Image (cartoon, rainbow, N blue to C red; front, top):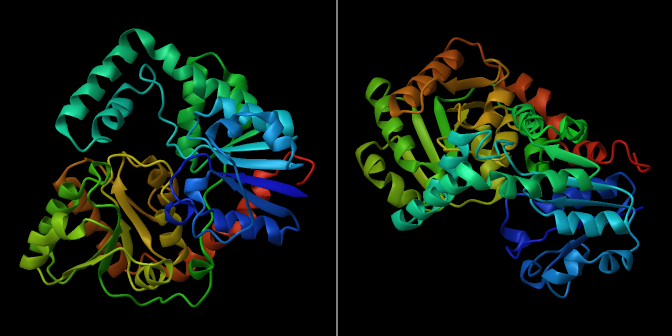
Length: 383
């Protein structure tokens, strides 16, 4: 059966965190014929079978998809592409909307979370103030107009894939606020798949007290200053702990702390195989983000036997730590709070309360591309 994997943005497929190659391999392993559909700007370097749409307008027409003779389609929507989802649904019997969202939408439903996102998604202070003003307008009188595409997108899709149970619960709350509890039945917890390099190979049980962090550190969403301040506090208490920081912008964000503490290593961007190896030699993944939709690196870390550390604002981590079984959530979003969480989690490893072999064995089947792709088709004629 022919399954379309639609990427409706212009960012190159080779540079996004939601790797479409994994979905393609998963559907192929299930016996289907996957084809990636994208815009011209997204195609360079992508090696899986693809169909390139002439322009963005074509993605909003059912005729374009009818020519592809599709049996199902999967599309990352950010909960806000009703025209595209509607065109897909008119042309094929099953459409899975991958939300890539933490579920905290609606200024009236989640005022604090939506204000933080509106404000901190911009690097410039003037743009942040403008965004805050726009958020206030939504909150005071125009929230329904902003919320409508989310409701329409869910109405048109057959399944809405959320990356974690907390995200599913929060979006269900949003639907309930709008008296659309019927849409909750479409929600399913379906995480992102990971590359094979995270799923294979032995898992080291003995690990040094090493903590890893991965992010675009020049992005205000990742809150590098919070992590840097937390690292200083941790090393003042336990100087033997190591930190490995991966991703662009690391030197600017962490240069001062790395020059003071040789235990801090700044590596810059790394390929998947290198990240898999680094995670395999670390105890925990720490995140300092203000929010996250469904961070793929969390799935990757669990598959390599790491535990998780993050503020409660990253609600997906709250799902995957499972009340402390696979990590810890900071009680306060402060340097002291995050540092305490890091120290407590390191102590849990020291005390033998963490087993990376068990952690990897628990999560690898969950994030396998075949498992994920099978879940996306549950309820369809292809399942």
